[in-house]
Image (cartoon, rainbow, N blue to C red; front, side, top):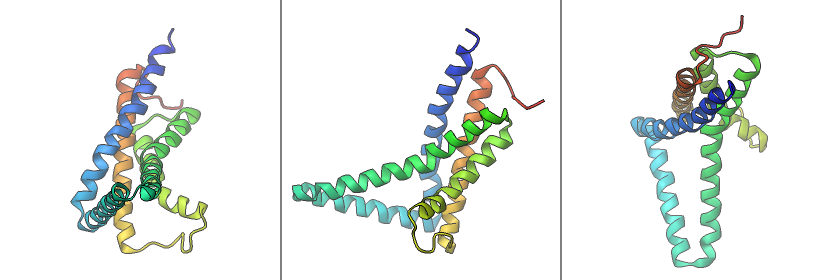
Length: 165
């Protein structure tokens, strides 16, 4: 039963770390004026779509599609980078704070460009100044998510800092 404690620590880390990212992301978005304006525009669009769905039942399909898009965006920004880095850390037996925080931040920053390339969006590799501000917010969100993941694993996993020999 020596495997039970690390397994439970892993599950706990995979629940707590993304939750921390979901708390930090809106805070960071609201701190920067450019990202705050974009977030308020998305919120206004969401309210309009939901209002139209309330008045016209046939518009409910648009509201569902918009909410599904927001859900996929959150999963792609908060959960997927952590799962990718956690799997990579387990395979390579890397367990330092630097690895988990920086790698999760880097993958989180790369997700918008990866998704645009996957869907063959024109100018998928280009970035404006506003996008670079979003990139900073995403990097910091990934750093917090990776740091909380490492901290929970280190605290409850019992293995400490698992570095390769």
